[in-house]
Structures are given as C-alpha cells and as structure tokens.
Image 1 (spheres, rainbow, N blue to C red):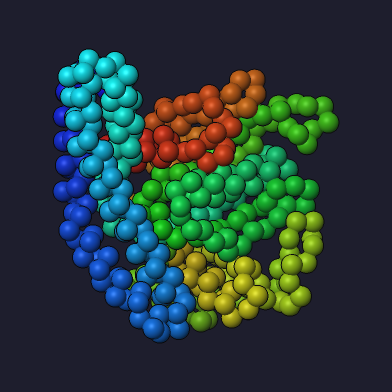
Image 2 (image 1 turned 90 degrees about the vertical axis):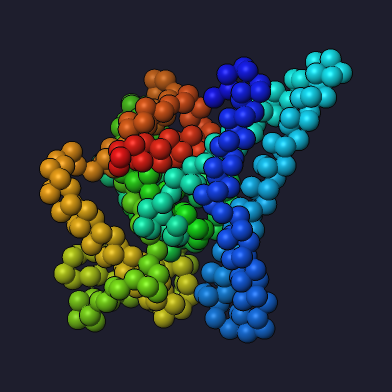
Length: 368
C-alpha cells in the first residue's frame, strides 16, 4: 500500500518487481519461447490439433507474460524520471501524474506477484471447473448458471481460452450442472481457491410473492491430467451411456446420439461431454475429465491421511467460502479472507481479482 512517501513507495514496488523477475526467471521463459516457436513453425504442426493448440496456447501465454514483465519494468524505470521532471520544473500536474502512475503500478505488480505464490505440485496446470446447483430449487439452478457466466467472464477478462464440455439444463430455468475447461497455464492454481459452496441471498424472480430466497451452488476445480500422470482405468470399471445432446427447453442441438456419459463404477464418479458432434471425440474428452477427477480424488485422499497424522481435524476450507447478498443490501463477502465489496454487479460480471488474489495469499498462510 502506498504510504505517501513517494521515494519509499517507488523503492518498494521496484524491490517487489525485482523479486518477481527473479522468481519467474525471464531468461528461462525466453528460452522456452524460443523452443516453442520452433515447434509452432513445424509444417506438420496441425496434423495433431490437440498438441498444436497446447503448443500455441503455451507460447501465447509465455509471450504475454514476458511482455507484461518488461512493460512493468520500463514503467517503473520511467516513473523516477517523471517524478524528477515534475520536481525540477515545479509542475504539479506532472507530480500528480507520477503519483497516479505509482498507484497503477502498485496494483499491477501486486497482481503479478500473486503468480509467484503458485508453487503447488499442480498449480501450473490448466483447470477443469464444475458447477452444480444445490439447495434452493429453481433459484439454485439459476444461481449455478449465474456462476458459470461469472467464471467464463473472469476467464475472458484475462484472455484465457475456455471450452464448455457439458451443461445439464434445469427444467424451468438455469442449469443443474456444467463442466468447462480453462486452457491457460496456472489456471488450476489460480482458480482452485474458488472451490467450495457459494451462497446467494436475493428476492427470488421465480416467486410470485417476491420473497427472499437463499440458494446454494457448489464449485469444484481440478487440474487437467498430463501424459506424465499415471491414471489407468480398467474398461470393466466404466459404464458408457450415449444420448442425444440437448439445449434449454429440450431443443435438440444434435440429430445423433453423440453425447457420452461415463460412470466410474468403483467410485460412482459420473462425467459427461456433449460439445463435439462426434461420439468418439466426446468419449475421449469425457475420459480425460474422468481421469482428472480420479487423480484429484486420489490426491485428496492422500492429503487427508497426512492431515490425520498431523492431527488436523479442521476439515476442508473450501466447504462454505463466499456469500453474495443482493437483498436487503448489496454485498459479496469471502468467509475465509473477509474480503468484501458492495459492487455485486461487477463481481457477477467476472471482476473477481480481489477475491482470487486474497484467496491465494490466505491459502499460503494456512499452509505455513
């Protein structure tokens, strides 16, 4: 936070940026960019579309990260010159401009600093986000759809590609569940702090007496599996069902039984995919999601054993994590970090940075 002492504040953000540059290691990032550029220029790149998208996506993100760091470094270096100019010319407008730029830099560098805190085993991976409606009837289904939009808008704001794999629509309004992929490095580490129960309080638009309704939806975030992961699933452990994709109101969006539902019999885990026209493609995508869910289940079971040995009986922090109140007042409050805002419309439109950043810092504190 700016203290009003310009030289001290500038020194602080300069020091923070130096730490970020050291941790992220621009030299290594530029070497990775050079390697990926060679792969991306291969004439047969798009023979394997999935691999091509992975290469070009990673290259794009790395290039953007390096450009962002270099831009911040240039702005910090220019800021001291701007301040000196204002002082030497005794120009208050230049001094005010320098102060405004200082505050903007402090915010931007603080956001980038959060990236350096993502050092978990799976934090660097892409993410699979699932949202399920909970208690609250039609309001809960509507709330689940509002959350889906909120997170897709958040990803859009950050330039993260997304792909909706499956959406199960409710009869009256909203959705029962949805699963979508966030195809950006560190998406899992970033969004994993959003996992848990989200609570909405509002005047129900579905109640003809305009009564206040509380509804719930569950958000699950898991890392995408990679080739190095060992997740073998015997064929006998899977039940495969095919069905026709459909949209809101039962409108057919496909004329063949291309949608696929996989049930993992030993655990009861069920995943579906209906975004592709090919049943084979949907089956492959659903299998990748199933593998990711089984991997995450195994990881959590191992963590629970470790917590039991440590005597940790506090339970998962992710169960109830945020309340969104639209009536009788406007407020979104995170139960864990106590971060709150009255600008509910901005939050529901994907402006989640303050909550995500606070969640990442809170998680780190809990781990230490």
